[in-house]
Length: 98
View 1 (cartoon, rainbow, N blue to C red):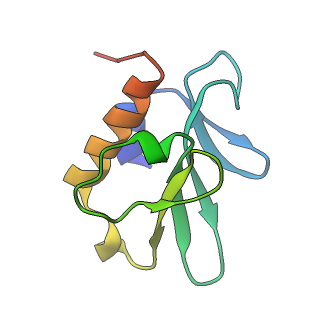
View 2 (view 1 turned 120 degrees about the horizontal axis):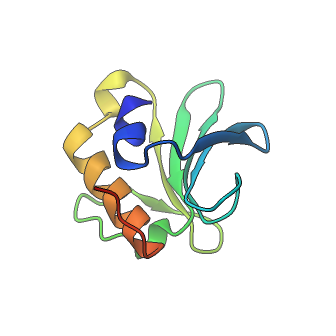
């Protein structure tokens, strides 16, 4: 996902069977976001998503502090909004990239 790679360069790996982007030294250490596939949609989620400010109201609260959005078509991807979410989720971990 080029959109995620731009905000979190080199942070992606497969962890527990699906793509996860983490800021720690190994997959699953300081995880930021993930993609999980289902038959009718993809879930794009954030470990600390409930802390991400989302004026759009698209992020749905999940277990613990997680939040996600369901993507059924490419039209569901709002590049500007998702980039804002990615940067906010990354910054929650206390790290920023250039």
